[in-house]
Image (cartoon, rainbow, N blue to C red; front, top):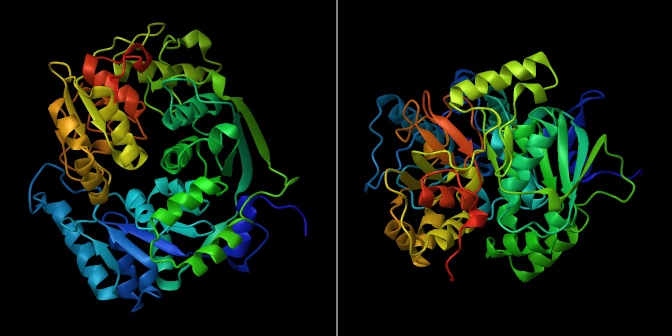
Length: 472
């Protein structure tokens, strides 16, 4: 047998049948749903008189439209959003699908809930009607987003007609410089290869830099790989992966665990396996990165000036730059550092995990956010929220002036009542900075949790490396 990449092994192991040279019928181990991409799929299924084929391999979460302000019980007051939540609940009850509704203690963002419940393991195929399903590649699972019609197909058959992707390997070597994190890594990569730089590819990350990352940091990296157009992101499972999965699957006995480990050891690209594209980077070139425009690839190191038209290689790129600067209210050739911000948002499926909150707390401990800044921390799940409260993180954040919210997608996207006003500028740990993404006319700067914490304390975009971090 010829050498295969990790991606090819995962596809081969889940291929029910080959349709043609480019397409296969792919089996899904787990299918996740939320309140806004599943209603049409259920309606179509019901209209055809079809049942959900494997209800126990589905999981549903209310996350995008749910309000996150402190309230018990939580009440969805927006009529359209409430209807979405009610429809999801009735569909799940009728089909026998597990649902984490707005007042379930395990409710949260699907891409945070599933791994922490031990539902995602190496070697799996995981689908969801959400593009950031690439997150699960951090655990050696093939995860990717699907459309509404595909959701219906998966519910009915537990399979998907799937077009096989090309393969790309991105290798990064070296220790991460001080003040940087996996969020800086992925924004930096996006700025280097472009928002379409991996379009049509399944990307595998490799190298000593990747090996040094925690499981949660790898999730941040894989989560945002879709922003370079990738159809999937993968990291070969290793001891860090096994430790994370073991900690979240206490029900597995020792015999089952040993058998799983033996199976997972083969989940890596073979030596000599061919990739359709390769990139190699040196981690020493990474710095804290911040977006200046309205696409995740419009980003620069905090100590670099905003680019100008002369640096653009095509007329369309120059036009895109002009439009982005106009929308963002910025000027070319100036530094982002010192730009005043109105809001700070820490959360989302990119950076709403306990490690992210620990990072922010370590920086703001004993300090207070700047006057005139409204800063919010929204944990990614009920479990993250409880852990932060037990560790004293929540108290540290509250004492520093942050709003401590209930779990949900919140200000990642304007589908709930946590939105930016027109012209408001936000330091955000989310994954997208499109026009209007966080609210009509809102201006979003993507950055790491550490950089968001620095912005909250100073009231402007600030190089976190210039702050003295309090001793823990």
